[in-house]
Structure formats: C-alpha cells, structure tokens
Amino acid sequence: MAGDSAEIIIRRIKKVAAAGHHGGAWKVAYADFVTAMMAFFMVMWIVGISDKQQRAAISDYFNNPSATVGEAQKPAPGANGPGGSADSVIDLNGTMNRPKPDEAREPRTPAMPKDIEKAARAIDRQRLEALRQDLLEAIRNSQTLQPFKDQLLLDLTKEGLRIQIVDQQNRPMFDLGGATLKPYTTVILAELAKFIDTVPNHISISGHTDVTQYGNAAGYTNWELSTDRANAARRALIAGGMSEDKIDRIVGLASTVLFDKAHPDDPTNRRISIVVMNRDTDGKETDDAGDAAAQGVAVPENGVVAATADGGTAIIGAGLPSPAAALPKAAP
Figure 1 (cartoon, rainbow, N blue to C red):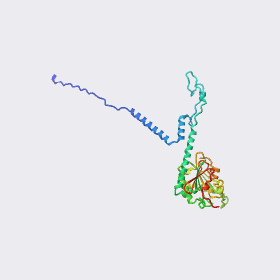
Figure 2: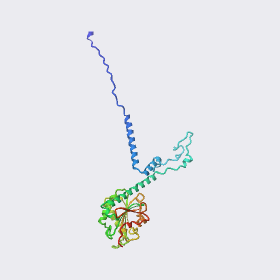
Figure 3: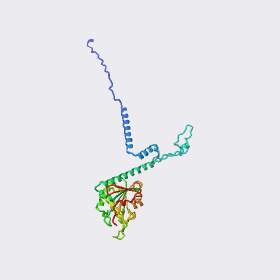
Figure 4: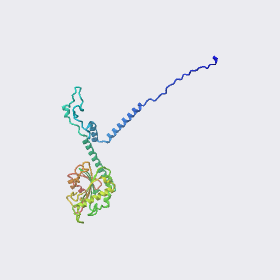
C-alpha cells in the first residue's frame, strides 16, 4: 500500500516585483523650467518693445511697489489703542523701534503715476507724429490727395495734430456762401477719415470764414455759416469711415481767427481745421492754437509743415514766413 501513495511535490514560485514608474518629480521640475523660460521670454519681449522712458517707469515700480495708487496707508504705530497691534518690530526689551533721524528725512521715491503719465504723453506724441508722417506721405504720393497738396496744411500744436483744409483761388471747398461741400472736398475728407480713424485720439472740428459778410438771409451770419461748414465736414468724415465717437466738439469761429491777417479777405482764411487732440487737450476747451493760428504759425514745437508745389514739404516756424506764403495768393 505504501507504494501506492502519491508523491508530494512542492513548487516554490518566486515572485519578482515588476519595475514601477520612476515617479513624477521630473514633471514638476520640467514644468518649473518651462514656466521660467516663458517668464524670461516675456521679460525680453517687454524690454524689446518699450522705450527708455517706459523702462525707467517699470524699474521705478519694482524699486518702490508700495507707491502705487490706491494702496491703503499703514496705520501709525499704536493707532489701534492700548494693547492693539502695531506695524513696528518689537525688540526683546519690549520697546518699539523708532525711526532714525536720518531715515525720517530721506526723500521718498517719486510717485509712480507721474512716471506713467510722462510715458503716456511720450507715446501719445509719437502716435501723433507718426500720423503726421503718414499723412505727409499720402499727400506726396496719393493720387487722391496729391492734387490738393497746396490746400492741406499739417502742424503739431500744443493741442495736438492740426489738419487744415484751406480754400484756394478758383478751388473753394464749399459752394459760395453756403455749406454744401464740393465733390473734391468730400473726397479729401473721406481720405483723411481713414487715417484719423487709425488712432484712438478724439478730434475737434472748427469752421472759419474770411471777413466778407454773408448777407443772403436775415440773421444768418458768418457764425452760422462757419458752424454749418464744420458740421458738413463732420458728416463727410463719418461717411468716409471715421467713427462718430471720435468727435469731441464742433466749433464755428467765423472770421475771429484769420489765417492771413494781412489779407483778411484772402481765400486761405476760409478753411476747415481738424485737430487730433492729445492727452492734455482731450475733454478740454480748445482755442484752435489761438494767436498762433491767427498768424498762420504753429505753436513752435516742430513748426508748420506745408506741402509744396514740387511735392516736398516746407517747415515754417516762429519768426519765419507764414504758411500762407507757401500757398498761391488770390487776386485782390
């Protein structure tokens, strides 16, 4: 019977643990690296597109971040009453740190908003100068504007970029004694609208007449006529594609601001003046450059720029001949 017993076989199975993942720590490190590179390239991009004044403003911000507008002021030490909290560090002997006399007299870092405003003004001026250059280029080369180069005057004033469209002998902008635009005047304004609409600045439009009194209707004077002509220019600009929201004011000045004082009945005194306003003027009352406009001379920043008959430009500043000298004179 012993020979009939089954043989007992014992099998030992050795289990080997499969190699697991190496962990996710490398993913965290890689994510930190990618984030750092993104931040680095963002900094390089900002440095590349900003000018010297903007970089100085950014530097001042990070040197003194507490100077930002709207930040709450810290309470004075002990302002919360006995037992209240204070913002000073307490020494081990239980007394508050007092500012040293030299530290108390140290001048504070200039406020950040001034730096921002200065940089914003610089950007605004660069924008208006670029618009002036684009318009001058169009006046020289555009088939639409080039024929009227003698009637388009551009100058930078204390209020912004001023664009003046003046009458010329045998080529008036409006019907005689009326506010109906000539077809070519509509074309000029439609072309100007495309350029003006490329900048965010608001504009003002003023109408001017010469000293000849309008007498076709009782009570209708050069004041009404100049205002109606300014409104006609507004409608033409909007029809040309300019946003209506850009218009800040419409003004009729009659003959109070003559372009050529020496010849008050000269056609150049009949004109439309469009001012693309800068930051300082936007929302404020303009005087259309006051005496400077009356003398035909811009507030002397860059001088008056007038397109000449040979396709170039003439820069006329204070002490030099009036822009009217660059235009063909009307017969007496």
